[in-house]
Length: 198
Image (cartoon, rainbow, N blue to C red; front, side):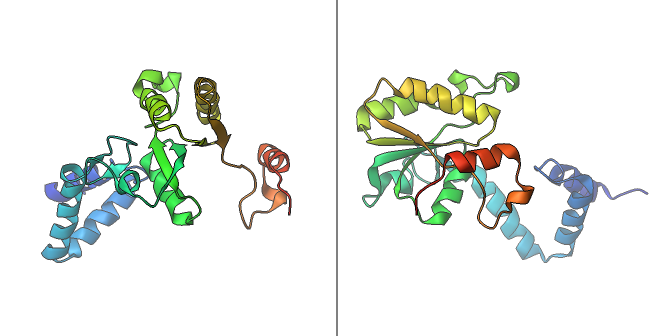
């Protein structure tokens, strides 16, 4: 079956997005085709705005519309803690909890030699400069608990020893509503090791 060229181009472009296969891309393209032109223009303009109006904060590398993000420029944030995350999307997840009120630092990934991601491609140098200049009391390492995340955490902890700063990592274990029966051994083990008093 021949597909009209503009539809095929839209399907091809949508399928380049993460987690979007050809069938989902086709459904999305057909859905957009049915929408009125104003709605499609709003979507198209919002995508262009992503590339033209957003930048990375010069201090923490969070997503921002200004040179310095709202978190770094806020006078209401606790400046004694810096939470180190892999990507800006991790900040969004942590902020949704309303449990943390400190500053952040986005690494831009984790150490992954197989993927060609080394120390020089991450914002590690900038983190060390911030710790030296801002003198926070605590650095919280909030990277994913996979092999690369663990290696990155250990590397950062070793580098941060030269500063008089407490280095912690977020707790790991069972999720709320999780069932012990279905959890893997490593997760249960971490939950036991990271137990807290009541």
